[in-house]
Amino acid sequence: MSLQQTPQSRVFVELLPWADRGRENYLLSGGETLPGLRRPLSSAPAQTPTREVHVSGTAEVSASPDRAQVVVRVSSTKEAAAEAKKSVCRRLDYITQSLRQQGVQSENVTVTKDFKRLENAYHMEAEVCITFTEFGKMQNICNFLVEKLDSSVVISQPQFYHMPGSIDNLRRQACLAAVENARRKAQEVCNLVGQTLGKPLIIKEEETKEWEGQIDDPQSSRLSSSLTVQQKIKSATIHAAAKVFITFEVKGREKKKKHI
Picture 1 (spheres, rainbow, N blue to C red):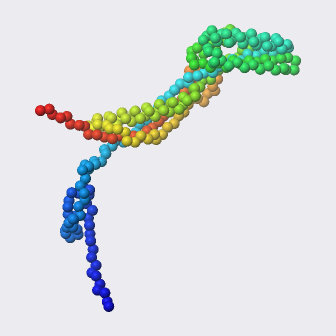
Picture 2: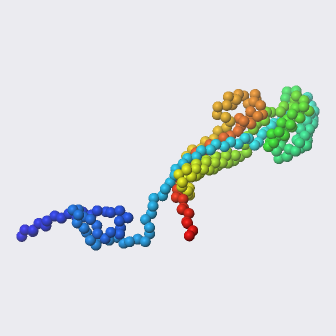
Picture 3: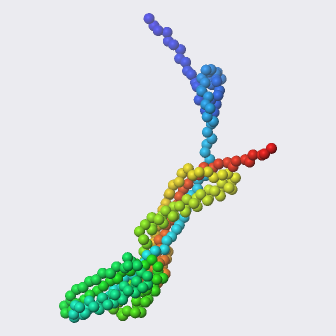
C-alpha cells in the first residue's frame, strides 16, 4: 500500500518587542494573524536605559622627608688603653649631655663603641647616631657641636628619609584626590547640560606611579655632599600620581510642582 504524501506547510512567527506585549494577535507572513498567542501582562513598568557620564581624573601629590639622621664620630688613639677610653668618653658625655639639653629624646639617640689594639697603641671610636624630626633643631645642634668640639669629632651630612608607610599613604592620597577631581568634572558637565549627577557606577584606578626628587632637576645628578640642606630635602621629596576612570549615573532634574 502506498502512503499518500502529506503536503509541506511552513509557519512564520514575528517576535515583537516586549513593549508590544499587550497585543493579542501576532502577524504572520502575508498579513494573516495568529490569534490566541498572548503574553501575560506584567505590572512592572518598562525599564528605561540608564544615562551615564564617563570621566577621568588625575592628581599628583608630594611629601617632604619627615626624618633626618646625623652621625657624630669621636675617635682617639693612645699608647695606653685607659687614655684612649678616657679621651673618647669625655667628649661622648659632652655630646649626649648637649643633646638632652637641646630636647632630643633618648630613644632618638643610639651610641656604639669600638675598641681595638693597633701595633703600638690602642684605638677607640664611638658613634652617636641621632634621628631628628625637626630640621631646624638639627642644624642648630650640628653647628653647636662643630663650634665646641675639636677636629677629631666628625659630623656627617644629614640623611633625609621618610618614616615607614609614607609611600603607601601618599598613594592613597593621590587616588582620593584623582577621584575627587573626576567627580568635580562630572558635576560641572551635568550642570552645563541641565542634569543632576547621580551615584558612581564604576570606579577604576587606571594608573599610579611614584618617584623621588624632581624628574628634570639637574641637581639630582650632583654629589650628595655638594648639596645644601634645602637641596637635600628637595631631592628626598617623594611624589605620587594617580589616574582614575569613573562612570556616574545621570539623573534628570525634577520639575518644581506648582502650588494651586
